[in-house]
Length: 281
Length: 323
Image (cartoon, rainbow over all chains, first blue to last red):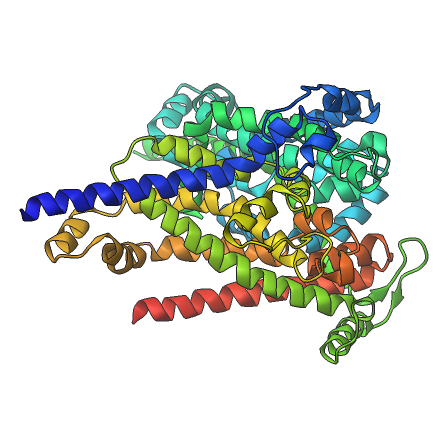
């Protein structure tokens, strides 16, 4: 009798669990679902009350309006260029630095590494104005390259790569040394090929970070044709480039698509990676 | 005998020389490998931070000569705070409004996102199907650009928008104009922030919960503890390190919130400065009012605030944990 009661209680509890989890899944997904549907509606329908859920008439006009804006393809290109530079810079330079901090011995190594880690505590707003002045002196304001200098080698990437190289067995590197490889050769022939999983993680995090970046591009890019998507979209919204809101929604979805698709494709890998970095922080 | 001794020293010195050479090569290689990384981080990290400190003692407009003004920039900052405390309106004391707003925002967002993340993780930490689906749905907001999230929510928060539609199912007649009403703007921004980060932290909590040994739960179950009591007396204490991590990360993020306010309230802070933040004020001082010295002073104030708040929290929490 008691067992039966217990079983009933358990299945009721399980039901509550599913209801709550699904309800919250809807809360988190609703803005995406709703804006996806509304992007195929006319503004009149998308703003109607109570909300309608089926586009009628079904229209691609919002997407066409976005694409007809000459600036939009430029924003896409700029964002991709910026993300590409940041990913390449972090993958290349952070891997080299991570390897050196993990596997080579040189005076002041650990002090220097701690000094770099301490930078993670400094808010972006403290270094923003001086960085602006430095980039200005270099003549690189309103230039993706100037903006890229700031996050070309992020400390978190160096940290991630160092931890990864530390986790590899020392024997592999010793063997290369015995065979007469110098430290740089060992890095390129042994370290780099072994580091592929961590390289992938750095590449994906930096891609997400660069694609979504706002403060840096807002400050360092001045003319609309040099904007990235986040800055461009907020500019288009504030200047009220379209009298209706639906093109903003369509543009937002286009801008968010690469990160959403990347996340859904790599979800297992990404979620695990973020948890691992969080645990170590 | 003498000869062997001599040759031995010769061999020894040769070995140490070649060892010395490899050592030198290693140092040289290391410097080459870390060169770019260290140079950039030193320039845009340490040099920039020290430069900010230097700037905070100068009056400057980016073009003319820099004028040493001592602590005047900090005086401007504190005068603004004092004026604000005496009830001066937003345009006379924007920094005070920014500080007040960001403290309220942090007080709402950090506890809400932490508790929500923990409760959701506890529900997901059972033998259920489709955990990955829930994780993916909860995590999606965290990988989406905050600017895009804000733009979508501006529309959802319109007077006749989707959010008011759902709210009216529960509370009939409650339909504020979230974005344009100074009494609701900051809450709208807070809701977006909670929506955007809680799922991310939920995944962190879930991972931490899954590493709690099962026998502790079994022992609690034998003692007759139900799921809610198991959560309070087993899960929460075991999660303490993760809670500290999530709260600290949340505090750091919330206190320098910028993107959501810039888009949802606008660069000028929305009606009556209702969505104005300290970060927004620093941005405006630096790039709109062209007072880099004042901006530097305010950014150092923000840095100090973040440092003190996270430090005090960690210290307090450790004391409570030790009891």
